[in-house]
Image (cartoon, rainbow, N blue to C red):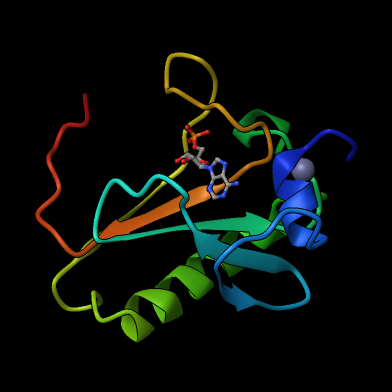
Length: 114
Ligand code: AMP
Ligand code: ZN
């Protein structure tokens, strides 16, 4: 997708701190971390948001959760705890319209979020 910052990151046109990659997904450190561990996990195929998920493209979401589990273990937060969250639309504060899952941990996280 043209003009998508996360598609550009996947393609290596914009630098990122990669933490995981396979044929379906890419994970990298958030540029503005909200916690000691803040990783974004994204599908390589452009999907704008949760609203765009359907039977044909949603299989990757389970794969993303599997990767979140592995990354959390590798980064040492599997036991202390972490959160995986996807913002959808303006009320949730979504700013990048390439679906992404925030993996947050390394500190006590507030609930409910603001
Ligand atoms: P959201 O508000 O859920 O759409 O989250 C978008 C996230 O992308 C924010 O946490 C940003 O800090 C992050 N972000 C934006 N541009 C970049 C970038 N070039 N590299 C890494 N993270 C980014
Ligand atoms: Zn994209």
